[in-house]
Length: 258
Image (cartoon, rainbow, N blue to C red; front, side, top):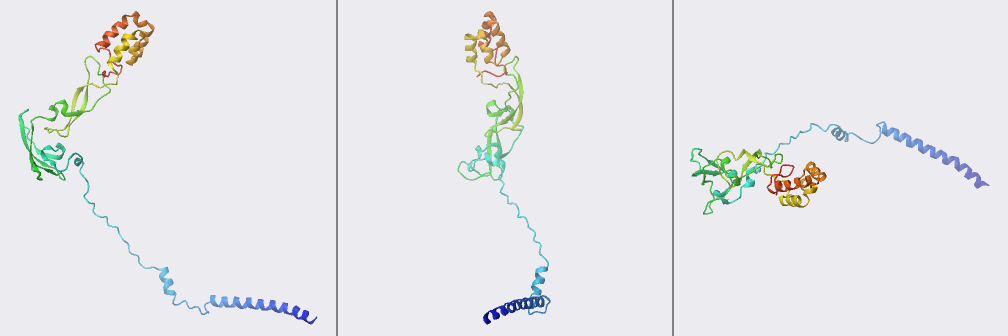
């Protein structure tokens, strides 16, 4: 009975101790926050101030590096290294030409290699200046085998008279001549669309009465006319055999036979 009374009295005492501890903890925290505690922030103020004010900053300017002259000239793609100077392409050398030479006669010019070009003489010794032998003539006077020209597929290769077109021609690299190496020239139309003369003639002989030769050449109107007229009762068929045989009738696109 006595033990029960003591236990009942201990419960209110324990609650009172817990409340007292909470009050003491609140007072200690309030004391510290109010600046009266033992925490000394004087030594930490310079550090905090340095963090808030980092001081003047230095501006670094990136200075671009000088561009290295490693660009390869475009003409170097055509210039062989350590080859004979007299056999270098015309784009690799600079020559002192004389336009007063006699056309068709051999002539000699003094030449020097362009920068970054290396060549040798007959004794395999490096040299920069040399002499070149050529024929006195302008580039547009060269034979057709010494230059390349643009082709046109819009002109009529089979016509009377033959049509011409304006082409741009360029001299081959190993050829030396006077004047501009690129020049315009009027050339005959000579392109082909893939039609064979032998195939057209064979179709005209065997199936010409049905217009097979005209259909093959792309002339579908004439082909329909021959088909529904049975080759013009044979007369049209014979005429087409002769015309295709001599090459007078060609493809409808105006190209040449293969």
